[in-house]
Image 1: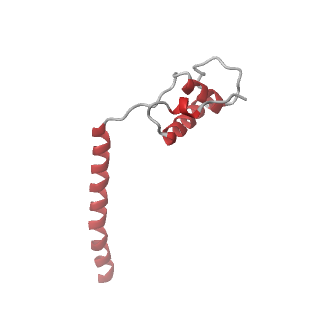
Image 2: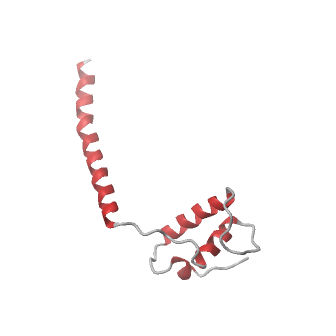
Image 3: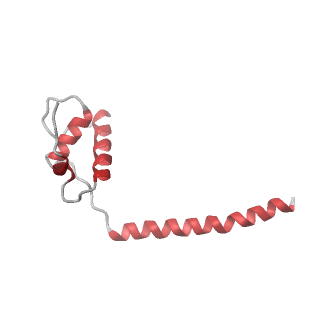
Length: 96
């Protein structure tokens, strides 16, 4: 069985969660028929995915700060709209 150094896999970003998600998604792609990006003797999709990450063939895509802020704003606006609608629905039910 091949062993991987976690610090090498995480890289400069240092985000273990992102590494796990990346490895799982890439392993799923390999399992579904995507060809491996590295030469390996392993048949295990997760091992192949981790090897690809270790060799730098697969990387975590950086996100823009604007995307994060936009997502937060949209979520806050949606939550606020949902909160405003709930009391109105309760008043309608009491009228029945």
